[in-house]
Image 1 (tube, helix red, strand yellow):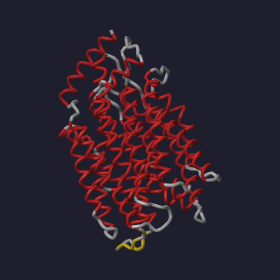
Image 2 (cartoon, one colour; image 1 turned 90 degrees about the vertical axis):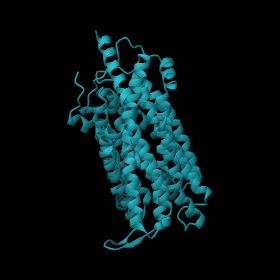
Image 3 (tube, helix red, strand yellow; image 1 turned 180 degrees about the vertical axis):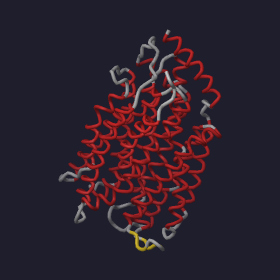
Image 4 (cartoon, helix red, strand yellow; image 1 turned 180 degrees about the horizontal axis):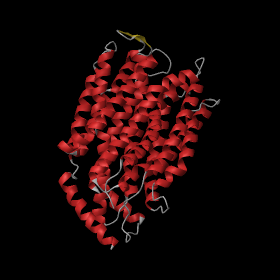
Length: 461
């Protein structure tokens, strides 16, 4: 069995996260604004909606992981879900961003049902996709490369959304009909995402098989996971990082609509708020992509653990500085945002590569491989941070007196500014604390990898 993954397969794998990321960015950047300023729900109510539906979805991740680990098909354990869930993913995605002609109570119920189902469908396709990385190759170097390609795809999907969404919403929502604009825009993204998932299914291969003697038992898998120290630390680190990112993402449209507004810039002339916020989101993702490209060389130079610590500290410091930039200094706002994006982009390829290491550590320790469970739990940790970040964003806006589509008080503007800066910095610093105690360094993983190769060879004999 070769450990090397060819370029065309890496590209195929990256397309799956391009599809997922399109909707992840829709949820992170647009959902809170959509539900408050388009659907007309209160900020606190939306915060609770995002928390309850996402926490429920987070609990589903390990269940989906265990289902994947027990799947047997001619396509493997994980690839079949890319094939069969792609179309339902697209349909429910469009329905989630549809505004029904209901009263306030009916709109809230519709939001709970569609968003809740969307989160479950997202889990059903994204957990197998993430776990696929762990069985495409046993090589730590190739896994880091795959993770980097994955996040190149992820940021490409995010950039596609941030660069086009506001314009498409305006085009499809002629006459100021934002509801129609959101529905048609997301429907277009849904079709593209469906096709990308199918291309990932067709272009990837599962190489790493569990030992034949392995008989997976739910009780053993859960016990191994809950006593896996590196996994627990990664759980905390990922949740904290997503808490940071989600609060910043959720605040962007509010920050530009109510704090920065339309601006006049040298060279660019008058720039509207929608164009300015789209440029801000897009440059953030481009900067993230630069960070992703540097992830592998930085990790080789100082190790994955130290790269994550460095990134978390820099991100936190820059977020605090961001709070003090006045609304008139648009270029400085963008410059700091780019630096935050580069620092943050280094993180996520390394995290997914480290989760593959955690799966190896679990197999080395117990003799059983539960790739789906480990990777689903990593997705769970992200969704915990995502859930708390989205809920806190809504609650913080409500606490500081935010009201949709009116001029904001100084107190409400303070809340928006804190949300995109200082409160986000707390999440970044929390991730640093968790990673500091992470024990699987480069030397230890080399020893574990060698011993696993011997055990797998013996099991095949």
